[in-house]
Length: 125
Image (cartoon, rainbow, N blue to C red; front, side):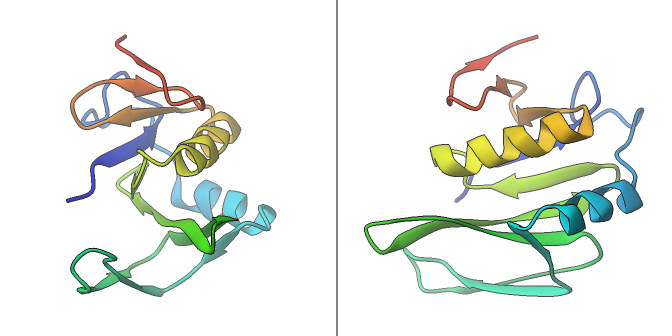
């Protein structure tokens, strides 16, 4: 199971105030050559082989840098004023998420309440 992280502008990710507007998110994606807005993204779980389908408005695919023939890929999905993604344990994905958060005036938080920095360290606010 992939640990979920959230990019948001709130004190805590479950709050509903200070949302990231869908149009703002889409504009950011269109201005970033590394992000591709996709209506449907298909992926395969590398451990189980299970096909994963992610769809909806505001889903962006990021193909990370290659390392040894493998890439750190992920989907960033807009959901009710926040951007959700998995795979934050991979430093390249976390660094990209922190760049996105900075551009949106936001932070990256795990579902257990910890906030993350681009270098992989975390803290509690």
